[in-house]
Length: 436
Image 1 (cartoon, one colour):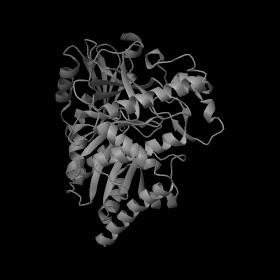
Image 2: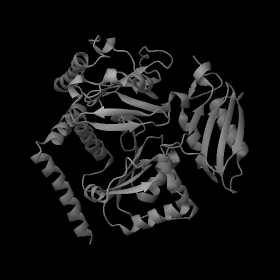
Image 3: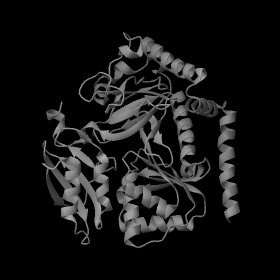
Image 4: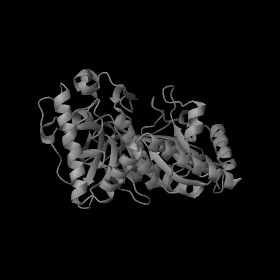
């Protein structure tokens, strides 16, 4: 049986690349360029490819869009964001692609601001090649089954035929109660095929909490790779997913409108930046000027391959730090959206991962940290009767936030999901108007 399954996986692998070959090897060419640029970053050829892609995009945007017609070099371009795009989208549309077939991607994320972006065929192909390259870095190979855990709204759900051809098993993160998790685990146990996980880290966390609660042993499930997307990953989830599924979890930084911007290497906390497909900059939190090297700031990306709606110096809304002391430069950390960044009582940025530590306390199911004022914080906890360490939790958080911090704990039955199916680990109701 296992031999037959391996043969089917191999046939899917061969079929994928055969179809690409008869269509002109478009994915293969992109894959080779991505591989070369990222793996030979310091060579003159890699530099030339990156410069060519940036210059060609800028020239195209300058010639064919209203918004970018007066800008010539990357330093001239203004920072744009989702609000600007949403209200002035026609000015960003390339006249060269008005009557051409494009793919529409929709995003709202944690901002609840709906945005639809057109992507030309070459951009879609580039995203596919990026997915193959970064999937391989995490241990996933084409042909294997993909366990896809996310919010499957009507626009995203795939047909039965598509799921069969792509070898995808859809799991709905919104439905993750004990009964549903049990059915998922049973299904995985019975499936002898090699597989990989792709999904929200909060969903993985709930699965691990269930396995802890049921005193489960490691699951012999043939999982070869685990990728977390859209949310930060805590130490507990990383260690528990390895414990139960015997594969290392890596975090992927991506969004719907751009694609894969960066991804952790196995056993690393920093992120490999996708310099092959994006030009990435860090801007100051409070103004549209580049941050100093090593300084935390807004992550601003230029998408090198979307010609239908060029996104040049696009503020992703996330905060991070680039380490330029290594080659290629890496993202040291990603703190989530600016409105989700927590500050201590001295108004210094505190890593959003402090909230992830709370799930390591016995009896804690979920947690959410909200900053209400300079020194006032609300910690929402979803716990079982086993939780007895309130004082320890408060003391630990005072160590992060300041001894003069005022921390209130509110016990809740559930940390609510966003419309996207994700959960916010941190919320800042204070910083937007009070921290400069």
